[in-house]
Image 1 (spheres, rainbow, N blue to C red):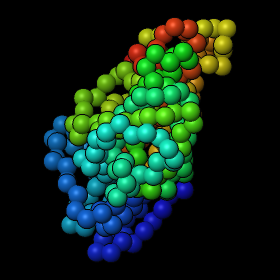
Image 2: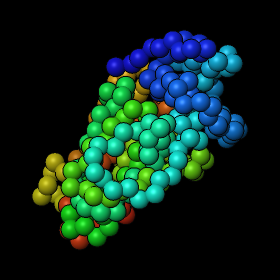
Image 3: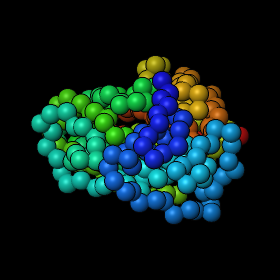
Length: 258
C-alpha cells in the first residue's frame, strides 16, 4: 500500500520511499545529500515529486540518497528482533547483510512498504545447505528483522556509487542503480537440476509508482524467460541451490539484453 504524508516543513510527497526517507530526515536531523552524478541523471517524469526546495525527485533519486546514510555496523549478536532506525544499531540504508554465525531464516516486517517482502534463507560461510552468507537488503526506518537460528550478523554498507551489472546475486537490487533499465532474457551461471522443476531463481519486481509487484521464475525446465525493467523498480532475487556442495554466494542470475 502506498502512503501519502504531510511532514513538518515539507511539501506533500507521494510514494512509499519518498515518504519514508523524508520522515527519517524530519525525525533524525540533517542527512547528507547525494552529489548529483551526471551518468545517473534521467529525464523527470510525471511520477516525480518535489523536495522541500521545490526540486523534482524520483524514486531512484530517493534510493540513491538512502545509500548515502547507510552506516556500517560491527558484528552483532542476534538476541532479539533487530529494529531499523536512526537511534538503533542498524540505520536505514542499503546493505550487504553478512551472516557470521548460524544458519536459518531471515523474515521481517516493513514499516510501510508492504509489497516488498523480507523473506530469505542464509547461513555463515561453509554452511551445509549451500545458503548465501551475504544478502543485499534495502532497509527503511522502523523495519523489523526477525532471525531464526542465526546467531551473529554484520551489516556492510553498500557504496554510494555502484557500477551497474548484468549479473546479480541474491537480495534486493535497484533498476537504474544496480542494473540498467531495459528488456532482458534470463540465464544463469550455475547448474540447475531438472529433477527439481520448481526450484531455481525466483524474481519479484516491485514498482513504487503503482504499488504492484510481478513475479517470475527461472528453473531448469522453465528457462525461456524475459523481463522488462523500469527505472526505480526494485528486483528481489532468491535462489534455491540444488547443486550440492556449491555455495550460493557465487551464484548469479544473468540478464542479457534483448
